[in-house]
Length: 262
Image 1 (cartoon, rainbow, N blue to C red):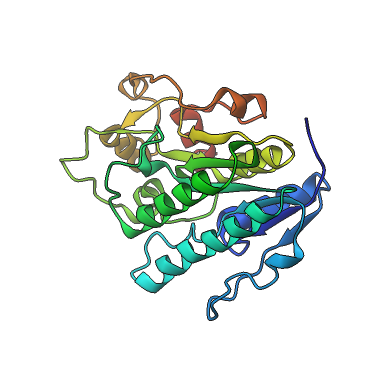
Image 2 (cartoon, rainbow, N blue to C red):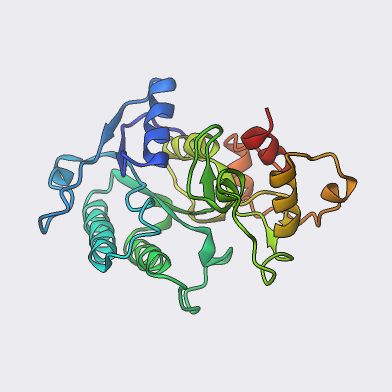
């Protein structure tokens, strides 16, 4: 069952938050910003004014390269405050954007590889432990890319900066990519659900390619070599619900064409 209650977006200054806002405006959905005040103990001072709707928590997604541990602590605190508020208000739901680097399965035993992943992991556990699964969705997102916009993702670094792929990672399969607009559309579609999904899994491209092949494609600006097409097709990890909500089943070559080949 779908609802039309308002959407509240944290991290609206970031790439994904902006895209979510734009998608809501495009379909004429009521959307509001969830403003943060990092300097105080209460991260979202206006949170208590929200009693119904869906919070799309995109905050902190742009801080992967931060070296300020205080920021990561604030990220965890912010999620805890949102969870406490959602728990008290039965008409509120939360959609949390986590990190695909945590893996596809709901496993919390493995140690995270960075403070960024650690903060995401703690947030997931907090949501899972305190909110019923029909009132939250957790999606682990890959690197997000936008056509014509230079970002910090590995493919953009290859395309714009002539980055070098190390021999140790050249053969590793890469599918950690999605278009910002596709993810924004999915999040807004999910926000219209009365019953959320709980842990929804990880998004990645359907087809994986070795990093060495990706590097060759981007640096030669050519997708014509037959060897580029002999990739290992993996089973998609896209949840069935995602595709029913309109998320496109794009493979890696299609994503590369959209991003770098007009």
